[in-house]
Image (cartoon, rainbow, N blue to C red; front, side, top):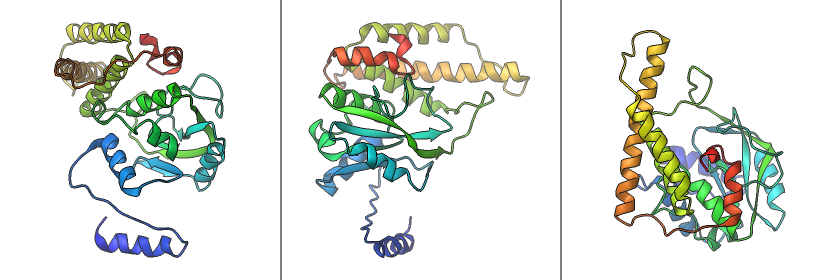
Length: 266
């Protein structure tokens, strides 16, 4: 947004008693460090609302998130994405959740501060929200996924109707999950994922993308395998350099891992 656009927005929301501040860092800190820096600048607040730029919020969603956050035991609430970014959750909406996604969520300010916010050293991008959720739960807080706070996620679907991840996003997602499993002491799950990546790499070959659908699928699989290999190499380098948080095993998280879409790795 340029200065004129910010000024127009500030005037519009100011008429409703809302203070608008717009921050441009000038560098890509990633969501983890970016959210932490903004939180430090804002100072103490009751709640922190996070929303990715490719979301469209329903008019009453903020009220629905606040309604669930009225429970003093709840540290965070996730809005329901349409279409869903993740596979269906186990259990019903509004019930306690093992983790909440950061694409659209509201966090209790005191809880966010108590656990130190996001772990920006370990997580640049993906699965920082899972790690934050598990640190909140390990500290005794409850999380919820709202049934009625709805957002539309405007992403490009692939040929199967699922959200398509480009190579950079695929690499970041795999790196984030390897890091998440590692810092929560799940060496067994890291080993399983490592074996799957290595097996996919050895069984994948490049095919022309201008052939039939089967060739397209093979090319996609080759790109995914290459991104996963790059993520594994990055993970091993960060592990060797001591750039990952110290291991922490939790019975709460071991149980909750089964509720995660990638929990089958456990």
